[in-house]
Amino acid sequence: MSDQLIRGRVWKFGDNINTDLMLPGDVHMGTEAEQARAVFAANRPGWVDEMRAGDFIVGGRNYGTGSSRPAARSLRNIGIACVIAESINSLFLRNCVNFGLLALECPGVSGVFEEGQIAEVSLGDFTVRNLASGAALLALAVPPNLLSLMQGGGIYPVLERDGLIAPKVKHAQTGRH
Image (tube, rainbow, N blue to C red):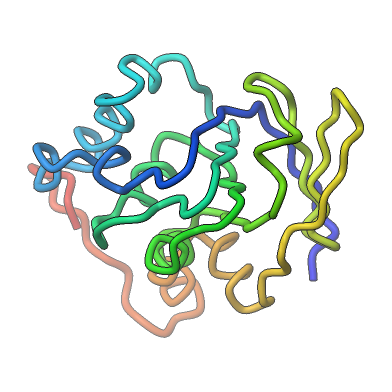
């Protein structure tokens, strides 16, 4: 298990944030860059221009409810370093693993952070700390194999890195794999 500490500025979202808000249907078939520009455009217009790579999302209960669209990939592509929520929808959590986005369930987390504060996460013991207030909570431990996939960029990059599949070839015209 890693003793790594990561820190990021917090953006707060409420309960039942669905994947339609993260990745709107009108860009579902667009490029990954087009999808990234549309993240949260319906409920927080301009948010992608305010957030910075390395920021965290703190969510409420049932974060990521909805469809299996690759919303976790879009969050990773805009630079979100970690999603910490009261609870995370199981399909969204699996997509976080698949696409290499660190996601933690941490009961009580939405009550100990205000937007803009700095969260620190220890991947050694899954402690989540508010650096402004000193409040600390324990997130649910992520099994080592899933944590490895999240930190390694997701399933395909890990399989490519380990030589288990051939690297994807990017098409020059579309930028798609």
